[in-house]
Image (tube, rainbow, N blue to C red):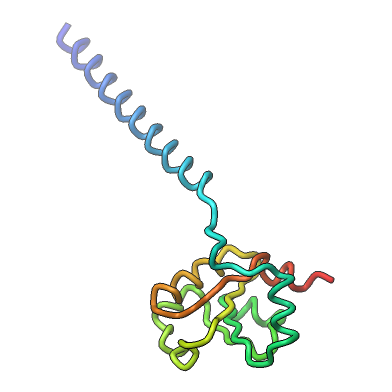
Length: 137
């Protein structure tokens, strides 16, 4: 009888932990599934290409990895991978008074890069679509 009682208690404890885990996982996934990128600090690809064409002093920060950049990069762009941007943000100090356009491969890392720059007092916008859209005709 005692063992039966212990087994039921352990089973109930285990089930409560499973329920808690499932609830937490659901909330976590719901948060990220519903989260949308703030596009107030973004620029469309059309607007970006127009700026590139008309402004020879435009500052473009490519936050892709060196391996990705080896496949092609916008002329005169600065490459600092997003993974090390916080540590290397001072390299952009001379551009602090200018608008910086941040681009990556598919627009996943560019908003992060723009956020890092904006948090450090820069004026940054990320390019919607990334290099995958930029390279399309």
